[in-house]
Length: 416
Image (tube, rainbow, N blue to C red; front, side):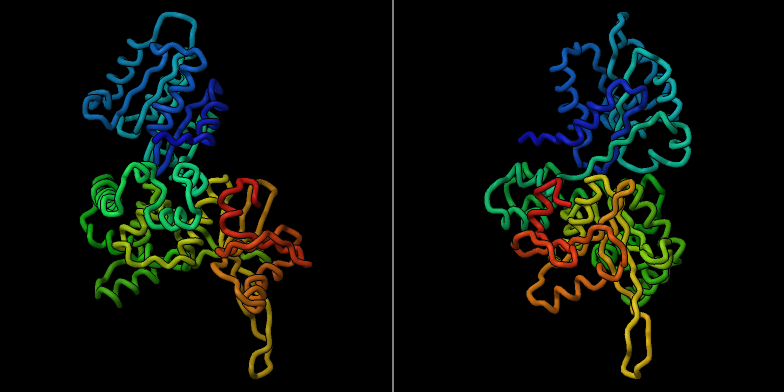
């Protein structure tokens, strides 16, 4: 089954010949190699590019192990370049495996005969040193697992059945090639343990592997809940009677972010227009991996729905924070007290801002009023949306708040 990742392919096409290194990043098994070496390769051929002007190297293939040596890699590419006036497209998959790869890419950029495309599976690939070296000369394209729209376009059928399968087994493309639930579970469990955990442990020379696993389980159990390293340390102590420093927790979370397994949504004071550094939320890039971490036992659909909405917003190119709005109310002693209200997502792209609430169900007027309260207390004119898990018709109330169904949001790229 071929899934056309048209959005990402178009980004590559638009970046052709722009003088920058095109950097494709993303979680392992999200389809980076397929995007570059199948879809983009096919595009080049269709545009009349000769096969001998496409130089592709999979650096995680053991057959190419010697090419992880920077000098041998440069020599090999030079031998592949034809002596003519046509552009050669150099595609290096998992280039972070090359020693001194920054110097290699800088050398390739100096050759006007070459248009360079590379992939990487961890954000060390885009560390401060790399960003500094490639400032203005690197073009990142971040590839996510399949969106629900991509997934549903491939599987078809009943939307509710597709949704259940999607939030259970996730959107890694290989899942669509596996024909039984049992095999999907085995695939995801093995991928988590033998690829993701193994990569993190080996890359960062970790000795406390069980501590890392326990941290991942805690984060997976608490998607959509605000937390911080100190609170996680307390969870280790109370649940497992394990002492671990909050600085170690912070390091391990950084490793998980480096591998693109999780993303952090920071808390933002909407009225104060500032970030609050005390707590953040963490969301998983793929629901199937998250389910495998928890042995498919903790499938609370409201929290999963929130995570998937977050991922969809990120796929659409938005920056996403968690909003905090403070208002005042009168307590039982008739005293005015501050009440913190949460906006699930403060969504930004350039000057555009949207406030979004995720509401699994909104069966009563009281529940609707509860979801709208934080939105109304932002006291500004930016658009406000509630996404509901029920199959409802899109509507706008007298206060300008839009309510739409989850499927309308996920299946329409222009929904917000």
